[in-house]
Length: 320
Image (cartoon, rainbow, N blue to C red; front, side, top):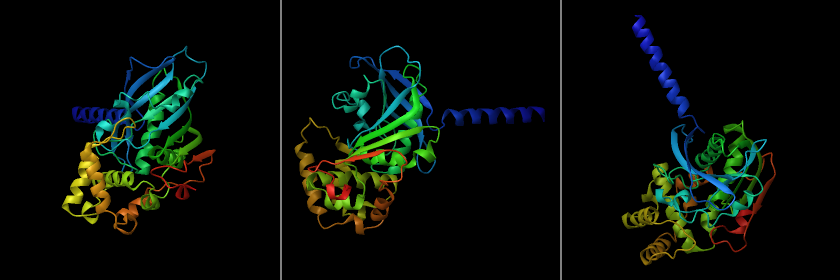
């Protein structure tokens, strides 16, 4: 009997330890980056987060900090939420050789900030990327900030602001929306969102550049069909579904790269096939779009929303 009790207690302890090790915000690994811009140091991180269903997910990202003596007090954190890069695993910004090229947040490093740049679930890690899925993305951002605090050399504190553009603006707003309840030990001090999709139904309906909008629709369709089980058959037949899948699986967005001819042909074909489709009137797409449209008020902290009047994806009248 004593052996049985002891074995049961030991098993319980192991289970508890494993659960603690996989707790949301726990750092799994922090690999130092060898080559970084002057005055900075960086780590490629892996950490745990949870999705809206409570499932533990391994995700990745980057943490960048000043390369200087340890400060006398913890550094403030800037969480950078990136824009649309694609929904395939390889589209993660931390995997890109251009990670440092388009990094407006680098201006914060000389000022003493720690920058936390999450990849989001499914980018750089296993699983489906929940594109424009608000709560899952916001949780991964907050858990990245939590994980960064475990890197001794970063000296990251609990005060943070979140800043992002496009998809990242959507992520920033969702991060602000759930911060108090999901990560109450963190202190959010500000939210900045540039060209954020705020009403996903209207954003899809009014996208200024219809060609770019077709690719965004492919990303939404593929991601939500995998993440939620939303049927692609409600958007089109077998050929249309195939185009959506191939565009999503085979393309990452890069400012310097010109799209391949097959990609252009696929986008134009999809644009034509979807011209009479309105996701705002088709279920479950309409319901999911409303569910994932972020709040833009009542965060309790200063908030900035910026909008380019000539943005390709977000119609200014929808934002404001």
